[in-house]
Length: 456
Image 1 (cartoon, rainbow, N blue to C red):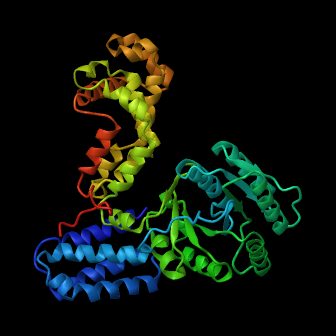
Image 2: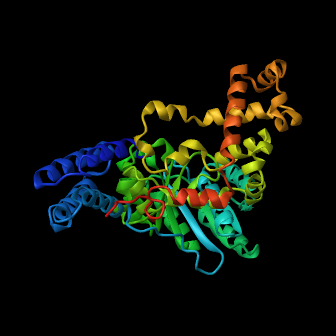
Image 3: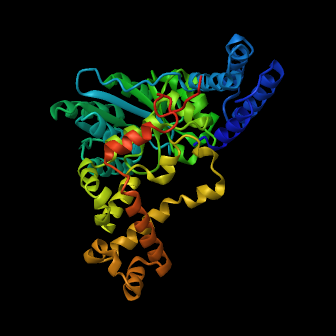
């Protein structure tokens, strides 16, 4: 997400990081920023307001009178990106009496049902909530079956309505069931609908009045660009939206929806949906995303992900194999490391949060292939326990058998063994999860909530 915008803005602002600024070159930079925003499919009113605010601050003493005017200009753009994105993170309101009701609304195909499953997973894992999923989609029976499957996958409660003729009755029945089962949160999925379909909009207004949700979240596909903002505005006029969930953000290289939705609707973005996995839901932080757009990374989010995802027991076990014990670092340990990297979203997801990685040449990026790690895991799985523990015994005939079992060639096996030897050397300096967290915090921008430092 934001690849195109990030590249254009970074190129424009890099020229200002050193040297003295004038009103002329500030205006030239703002022109390039305007073009970058428009190419990213940001809504025109949002672009105009963004440039006007940035110009007002840039030509004043805030930039021209600064000791480091170039860096001050970068900070102006960073701050205005935060304003466009919503300025502050707005968490879910879970303070109401249980069951807290969350109602999902949106167009067909936006990803509401999948988002319901992801949200149940997120609430269970992050907030330790007992969640009940229910659907009041009386038009698509497959949606109810899909939601039941998702509920089973995330280990939460599920309610199937006894009758499917009336959506309002289905939602009310789900609320009664949530109370009987002492659920902390009830997530209600609804049928996809167009804002211009008045009977359908009347139905969801009736549902909202019947169950009085604490949160009404509009689920929208990020790849629809500024149309996402216009659709969200139409829904906001019909429903008391408390927030927006942008789905499929990993497939959106422009990012126009994120920069338009909050400004046009006034409803904060609360979550970003990434990928198809049920753990692919990220809380939305405007300051961190602004830093990522400007190539400053988002180390704080990466640190939080490491602390939440990395298995502490495995990390402590691995710590015993550092230093002099590095020779005991076997291929099983290497597989654990590769799998933990997968749980963090893969190499590409990690690099997206590291400062300066957006400026890597395309050739270097192409080498950071998550599929490569999965192939390495397949090769290790093709080995016997003894081979994984004592890789030195792997000779030519063993390599041929391992390669055939993993569906690859001997060259891949050789690359794996070479990489293992390199990791053994690295393990002499590596540590546990705590050491990994400290390392990330020492990266440029690691100590700043936005994930990037300005040097001001």
